[in-house]
Image (tube, rainbow, N blue to C red; front, side, top):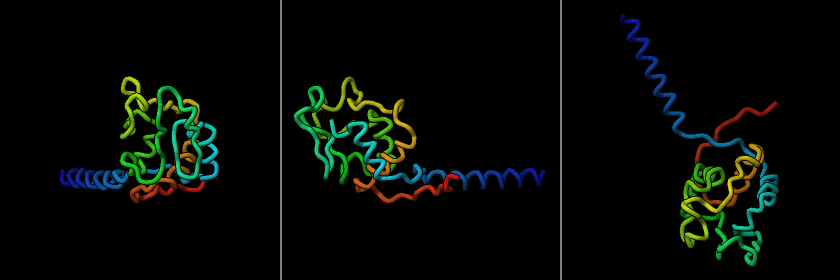
Length: 149
């Protein structure tokens, strides 16, 4: 009985220490910023967004959109790495603030299309890595990955 209690206590401690490590989150593998920029262009992000150093065609914004949504720098809604990744894979999770509601949402859903069914994981990794270099994000511990063979 004593051995069982000792084993159970050890398992609980080990489990809790594992939870502590996993609560730090994870990051995607390091991408390639040049390839990420190509993904940014391929999916026509500048048709609805502005970003320092890039031209947006404000004459041809979609629908009733009057002001393109700014990317990069220090913005109120994207301060952390998880917020950046989430904004790409689930644009309706948090809608952009400071814009006319009709410009950024329809029936509570972001007007930004979801690219989840067409963008590869490699494209996502590279796009996030490219975008990350344009934001002032809070520091975070990067997940260490083994090099692919």
